[in-house]
Amino acid sequence: MRNSSDYDAIIVGAGPTGLAAALAVAQSDLRVALIAAPHNPAATGADTRTAALFKNSLTLLSNIGAWTACEPASAPLNAIRLIDDTGALLRAPEVVFQASEIGHDLFGYNVPQQALVAALRQAAAGFGHGLTVIESAGAQDIAVDADRASLTLAEGQTLTTQLIIGADGRRSICRHAAGIATASHTYNQAALACTFKHAVPHHGISTEFHRRAGPMTTVPMPGRASSLIWVEHPDVAHRLASISAADFLHTLEDNLQGLLGKLSDLGPRVVFPLSMMSSESMGRNRIALVGEAAHVAPPIGAQGLNLSFRDIATLADILHTAKLEKQDLGSDDLLRRYDNARHGDVNSRARAVDLLNYSLTSQLIPVQLLRGAGVHALKALSPLRRRIMAAGLAPAGDPPPLMREADTRDATFASRRTTL
Ligand SMILES: Cc1cc2nc3c(=O)[nH]c(=O)nc-3n(C[C@H](O)[C@H](O)[C@H](O)COP(=O)(O)OP(=O)(O)OC[C@H]3O[C@@H](n4cnc5c(N)ncnc54)[C@H](O)[C@@H]3O)c2cc1C
Image (cartoon, rainbow, N blue to C red):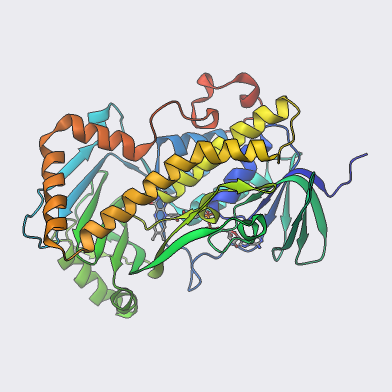
């Protein structure tokens, strides 16, 4: 007889990645527990970030029953505009990427992260038998042996499982318990995130100003409103967060060069320090890593959570097959397959984001010239532009089943699909 504290998989962390992972994995009729510690990513207040989520991520959200609740707070992204405001010797031309150029009606949606987490929480609470949400101060200790892993909660209870899925963010204790090393660095940059309203409509266009201190990006929200990610030197970002709302809106209006007209209704401003982190492996010793437990990148090109959702869909697919074939869900072979499947996507995007950030902030004239020439080429050459757009949204090839529309997915996987 199976012990009530024994699970097929235990997910640690109830941020967007952990919640989505729990819902995705539980669809395969596995006995899953989610360890939900209080989620407070913006230590200084509410999470003011939004996430630009591309089509495959939205399909995943739909397939795990969370999209309907997110949609009213979210806005479609039809186009992305780049404006060179670096003052470089070779000024890059303005470039607009239209989703229609690659045959899509839209690139994705801009989703407030608080609404996303609330929708995922609601879906997890309504999932029913198969997914147990354990409210806890957190996982405190993890031990692994040849055929099981055990996890002790801060409250003292011990749970056992075949596989632990670490979705516990950048200071992951799961990653530590697995003995997975990381490479990381902190940028001398921070991102101020907030929302505001404006007089001129955004027409579904996200605008990225390339500036010396880092990008400043407006992303559409419903109505005449946008979210803002303004990357600056940390001192400047904190000063911008502390000046009066009127002064901030005035400064922002100047920096947006009249693009959105008169600004108003500034929401709370929160500053996020920027760093880069990559793990030498995505899984080992009965522990698989997803999301920021495995990789952290600056908010350029909206890669972070989109990558995390691809981690989840890939891992859920591997676990689904392992369950059907009655394999050990935490075996070295399974974790190696997961690492192989995710390694290239995660590392290539981390390198691209780092390089783009470097090309903006570099004082080196050859680097500035190369970036300018690259944007000129993007503007002039439609096939190149189309290739870059498609690559920015997703890797080549078929997405994992949970990122496909229901009618193109394997019927058994679709059988646990919750309400859309
Ligand atoms: C300014 C900014 C803008 C961004 N914009 C975008 C965007 O447009 N598009 C995009 O795709 N990405 C974007 N990102 C990235 C995205 O926000 C992150 O990738 C995402 O929030 C990370 O989610 P996560 O669940 O992996 O980690 P976290 O949000 O850090 O969640 C980890 C969770 O684990 C919990 N936890 C930690 N330790 C334990 C423990 N011992 N036991 C139990 N629980 C534990 C924590 O309490 C937390 O709830 C942006 C990031 C920033 C900084």
